[in-house]
Length: 169
Image (tube, rainbow, N blue to C red; front, side):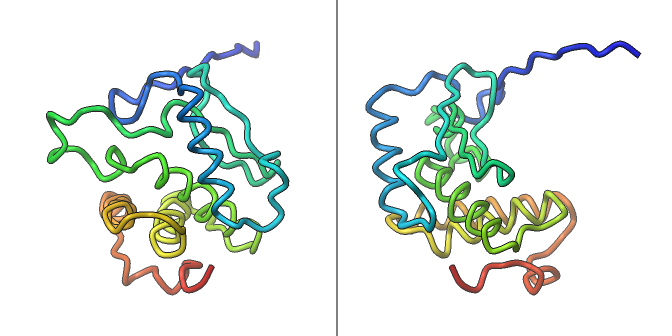
């Protein structure tokens, strides 16, 4: 069997940001990350900017690496704001909090979930509950994101909340 190299591009279908980040946006993101008071964070060494639209914003626990791409920004669709999904409306602060307070802190505590749906819901709930400097609207949107993900899989929060690492930072 011959190995074929595939090239992937971030295409959110207009559901998340798809324009390259500006230097000002990157500076704002770095300042917010610094405000998170994260354990073991050394001068933002865990950040890799991936604005080439080849990779999504994501945290990689194996390398303790945060990739930040254009999809860190919410969709720019104010004409349809009321009909957009919770994930589409998550602000860049909410996205960073989801990755670092949600995924990274759970990984460092060895409390990640094996099922991707539970891991994503846990990350959104943790970000909503524990991330500093989020507005109440940002927290609400993160909680709606978790509930929507679970609902799509036919799971209710009350069925799995005892499995999630969501009671303390």
